[in-house]
Amino acid sequence: MSGVLVIAEQRRGELRPQSLELVTAAQAVRREGDAVSVAIIGAAPDAFIPSLSLAGIDEIVTIKVAAAEFDPETVEGAVAALIAQRKPDVVLIPHSVDESVRADATQRRRLRNEVEHSRQLPMRLAHAALVPAILGHYDRNAR
Image (cartoon, rainbow, N blue to C red; front, side):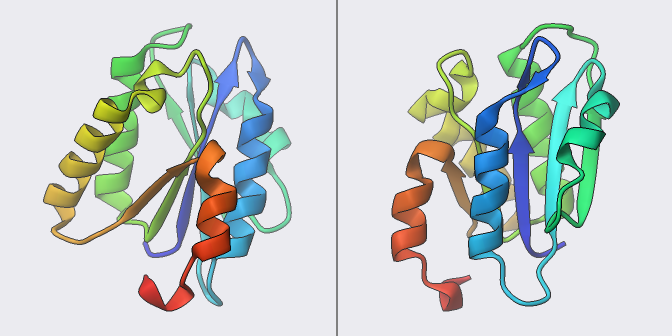
């Protein structure tokens, strides 16, 4: 897969607003012909399909995990496996206070290194707080 992968965020059965912000950001960074895929990870990910069935989303990927509550190691493993399998050009990951695996810079670097080593190609990881800066300086030809 080339294109854009958005990792949606949910808590206590509700889709977090950051997820929809990243879907909008994905539209801005996609090139003609790029697919935008959204992945949702949780105990009942299919419940979020109606909320994520939006214009501009080409595919919704559901990843069912056993943990009912957020578990950083589970999410980190699922995201790393998804990126390694799909090999997107751009990955947009939300950032919130309770998403410690995504918030911690060391963890993000480790995840990026694992994925880059599995692909042997550069990639871009971003979280919602950085999207405006990325979009302001994004060079479409750099991908």
